[in-house]
Image 1: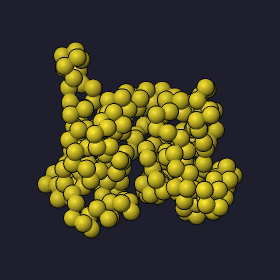
Image 2: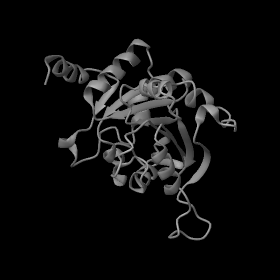
Image 3: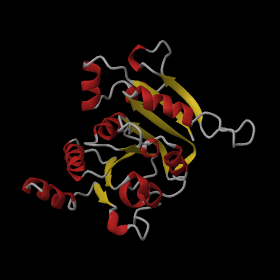
Image 4: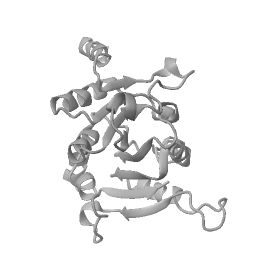
Length: 232
């Protein structure tokens, strides 16, 4: 491992806006589970997660746009978390934090009803590995266990396959009682920047104004960006 990467991992442990829940800690719940508002943010503002946050571009952008909400970027890659943490510190964003862990452990890190919204931005579409997709029912059920009632999930992706797959996952399930949905679709477009339908009021700042490094690359190549908003 390069020396500078080792230095960054060591420095991560000194950052007040970064927490870690790693493989060696799987036998117990994370110490901030159920206490993120009281012990980290020290306010009662809604908590929003960005899953697979990378360098935290979305968490930071949302934190700037919505100062009355708290944002937590989650990723397992320490070097990426380091960059996001540094950027948040430089911008003095006290409402942005980072958690280095695997998304599979989300229920160990957050309590029931602790989260208001989840953003999934340009995740790995996992070709031929449906169960690893972050919008597979396995993950959606995990999100249900930490989201407030009618909590919102946003998916923004350049992958038409993942977009269509997610639409299928949130359609009414034949195993549910008649009329009951596994999720409620609020908005969908397979071409965000050419959509004939207006975005829901208040969403434009997060959906269209914030663009990650990868989204800029995708749009420069002419790829369509898709967007889904649904409730669990």
